[in-house]
Length: 89
Image (cartoon, rainbow, N blue to C red; front, side, top):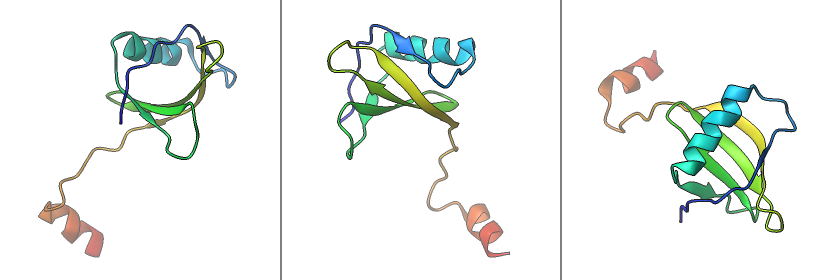
């Protein structure tokens, strides 16, 4: 189940650019749902339009730590014939 997160501070140990942190902050402030990691408590994926952010939210301080980010891949419908033909060649 996705949920909105209230985060006090976003920590940036991997030294991502300031704009990356600000984009994540805007998503969280806007109430963007976060998808819990089923294998790890307090770890979440936050999906933006172009990026996905992987964060840990401390249950003690409420701070988030940005651990990773990656570009989102466009979702392809299962019945897209052009995609199937392209993968067979």
